[in-house]
Length: 293
Image (cartoon, rainbow, N blue to C red; front, side):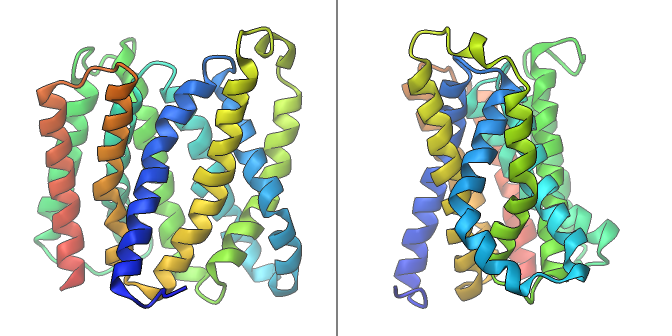
């Protein structure tokens, strides 16, 4: 494949944005029959089973010093966020979930500064403030910041983006000697059995009593295989050939597809939600633009 060609890299970026932008509606479909923790377990378990042959093959490069970082990549990069996202989508729309997911580069930058001694330029703080302001606006719309209100569930997605920020920094700091396939497959090797074991302890009988449960199960399996396992492999490969700044720009496009799927599914999007999302994306753009320079 012509990974070095700009047109191919941009095409891959669009495909990834479509896949990840569609993941929110797939979660919503899966939640029609399954509880949030069951949906997350199915997602991670499916990805683990698909990646298992690669995990076995990657054992030859596994070293003791990498275990901590791979566990961080597995639990903070995939397992915990999967549970947080499905929990959040029991009370918020998939479009709003896609909007808030745009905070990932903001928290990647913040975590890098606080925990990994990353360098920065003063102007990047403006991007951070804009990102946080936009997120506060989205979370506070409708129910306010009272934890008893519906929109407080959006905080689960904010926490998930913080997990993503730690994961990205950990990989960049300590796992650069491994390629994307090795990092992804080995990290899922540790979390996959945990997800499957947890799923088996839940009330599966109740889930399969719902009409069309097999369709909802299929949506979650598709999310795990395509939206988690394959998408992460493609993303990690893209990073090897393109700049990290270019690869992270997928964040700009994901909310577009999430919103479109939400509208198709009958969700309502307010003008103020669009405005706050634009504030977040502007902040992300400022952070990445300064990094590029």
